[in-house]
Image (tube, rainbow, N blue to C red; front, side, top):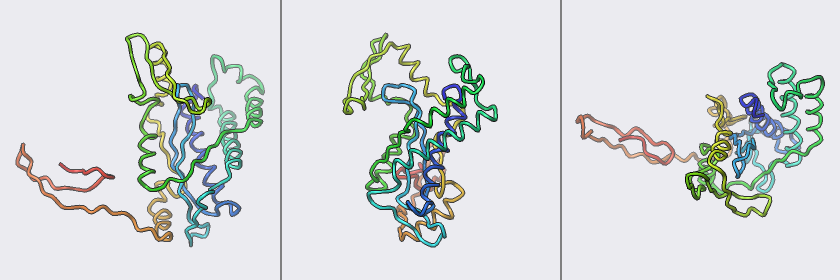
Length: 268
């Protein structure tokens, strides 16, 4: 994956989005057209290379006939085991197609995979492994969704608050060991190794790491998503805007308040 980042990161995101939207349409589960916002992460707590996707999914969707909004159960959305198998199948299918099309580049330690049937045998072996999918409980409110997005969208690898010390030679930082009951521990690395690990997570130039699928995709926001809001009987929260006119202290010109972006004012 590290040797084919742009291609395989895209496959990872598409596999996650397609898995949820396709399973949700099945009447056995939700029977509705739902949406997914996917966010790519490439790191673990200790800055290791660990590509994975965080997904935010609405608690329901537009019925397949487009006439009703179907709410998911408060305790159940889609079965995790089914998601896991579907996701595995999706990713490995796209991976195999990319290899057949000659899009996969293999060199150095992975060059041997390109010989004969080695790559196809490698893919077959991955079908024998259980892939990990984890579903969290629903968020309590829109504020919690925004708070979650704020933590997971634009942070890269490690936040400054986790760095405890730098003595000119080594860097010490906090990390959570999920294999040891989520205990918070300290890790000390030589500065060069810390930088090496950090640079593993610099994405290819221009890569879009946040992508939207289903009713949350840009082409459906004004149609299917808007219809969901109406059918669900949800009143959109429109912030109260007070018109203000300001005089620029530099040039004396007039500045007019233009609007709100989230909870932040856009204006002078």
